[in-house]
Amino acid sequence: MTRTQPADRLRLDFIQDFGEAYQQFGLPRLMGRIVGLLLQEEGPLSLDDIAQRLQVSKGPVSQVIRRLSDRGLVVQAWVPGDRRHFYRATDDIFGRAFTNHTELLEKNLDLARRFVGRIDSAEERGADYFEARLSEMERFYSMMNRHLRAFLAEWHESRLQGGADGVSR
Image (cartoon, rainbow, N blue to C red; front, side):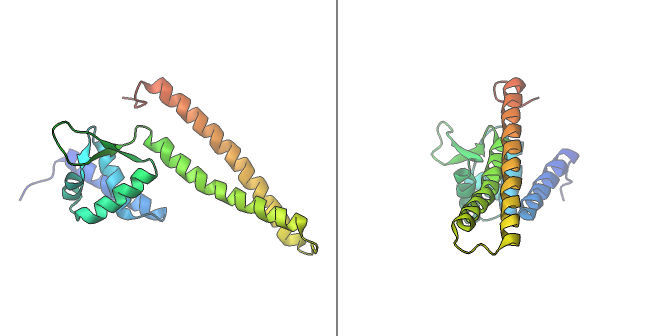
């Protein structure tokens, strides 16, 4: 029986905990585990490598990689002399993940605006409480959107100062 080295244990624990964090956001645990693995790797990994390292089937890994790619969190990488598909975490994975989250929150702002507009154009108002809550929702998400955009701008500036690849070492 092989003993796990402390560095290996640290990496395995990170992958597991990252999977649980994704699960808490309502996303698949495997998605978080894949991101956790890719965050540790400087070079790209193939679907086979990912499946083997996480001890899961290649099919679910392929599906999750497609979703991560659609969200801009992973990118396909070319490995000379190998025809398999390889993937790595995108350079600004944290900023991209935050942008994805921000875009979801913007949908709440759009929802509030849409219904505020409908109440404003309705012949019978009579929904004072509902109108007040929608107005509050619109103000809340407008303010949140401004702050999140300002944070993203500051983050991107910070990455530029961190070096060519944005990764501070």
